[in-house]
Structure formats: C-alpha cells, structure tokens
Amino acid sequence: MIFKALKTVAIISVLSLSNLSAIAHDGVEMGSEMSARHYVMKSVASAASVAVPMLKGGEFDKNAATLAAASMAAAGNAFPYLFTNEDAGSEGTKASANIWSDKAGFDSISLQMANAGHDAYVAAKAGDEEGFKAAFGQAMKTCRACHSKYREK
Ligand code: HEC
Image (cartoon, rainbow, N blue to C red; front, side):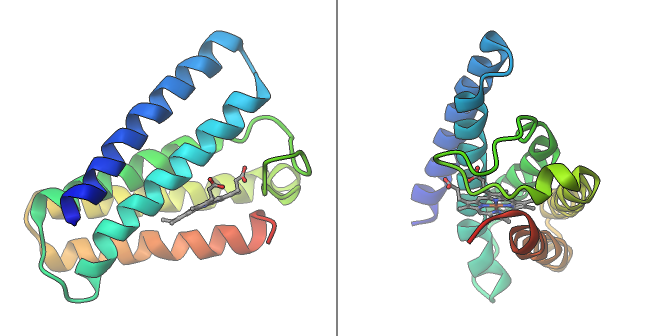
C-alpha cells in the first residue's frame, strides 16, 4: 500500500519534470504550465496520503516519511513559478484571480509549505518521528490556507 503510493509520488515527479522541460522549451506556454502545476499538486496529494496515516498514529516509516517531506518542500518551492501566467477563468484551471492580485500572499504561503516540508524532511531523515509529525502537520495546514483564498471551488 505504502509502496504503491510512493511509486505514484515517484512517477508524478518524473511526469512533472517532463512537463517542466516542455515549459522550458516552449517559453511561457500556458497549457504546459497549467498541466505542470496539476502534476505537482497531485504529487503533494500523494505525499500527504503517505504521511497523514503516520501523523494519525500509524507506523513511522523513515524512508517513506523522508520522501513525502522532500516532495512537500520541492512543491512549495516550485509553486511561485508554476503560476506565472494569469490564466484565472481559463478552461481547465481552478486558479483564482486572487493569485495574481496578491502574488506576494500566494508566494508567502508557498514558502511556508516549503519551509515546513524542509523541517519535516530534516527530522524524518534523522529518524525524529515527533519532529517529523509536527513539521508535516504544519505543512498540511498550508493546503487549506491556500485553497480557501487562491483556488476556486
Ligand atoms: C500556495 C497555494 C497552494 C498550496 C500551499 C497548496 N495548493 Fe493545492 N492548489 C492550489 C491551486 C491554486 C490549485 C488550482 C490549480 C489549477 O487548477 O490550475 C490547487 C489544486 C490542487 C489539486 C487539484 C489538482 C488538479 O489536478 O486539478 C490538489 C489535489 C491539491 N491542490 C492538493 C493540495 C494539497 C494536498 C496541498 C497541501 C499538501 C496543497 N494542494 C497545497 C494552491 C495551493
């Protein structure tokens, strides 16, 4: 079960990379940025599905926890650069216009997720289960904080 989820995280990371190279080649090509951000969002959802059971008292798996936390840190650092085209209201995106009217606020929540993900990564790598849980829990709070303001229902 956990291996299946980890495989999803790994596959999605590879897909995201191939999408990112599409962005790099095409310049600011809207479809690529939109699909890259969807892949990266799905990678954090996979990371959450691996880590949340541990936060709820499930068995701590150091490798899985470290990988999940690394995904969160990477995604949080990537978000500001996956929303460079003002495409709110376009087909296929739930990105809110608030992202571009308040990019500093959006980037700040992204950074909070990156930092909490990084703290969780350092703790997991050191085998510090409680530190991992606390930091990953903080990273999870940023999902709702961001979606409530910057994602359309
Ligand atoms: C800084 C803001 C921000 C943070 C933090 C954030 N999200 Fe998102 N998320 C968004 C936005 C904006 C969208 C809509 C993107 C779009 O449709 O183009 C989205 C979309 C999604 C989607 C739908 C992807 C798709 O394919 O349509 C999932 C799943 C998701 N987020 C999960 C998460 C999880 C889980 C977390 C926390 C671990 C998280 N997000 C943290 C802003 C954020």
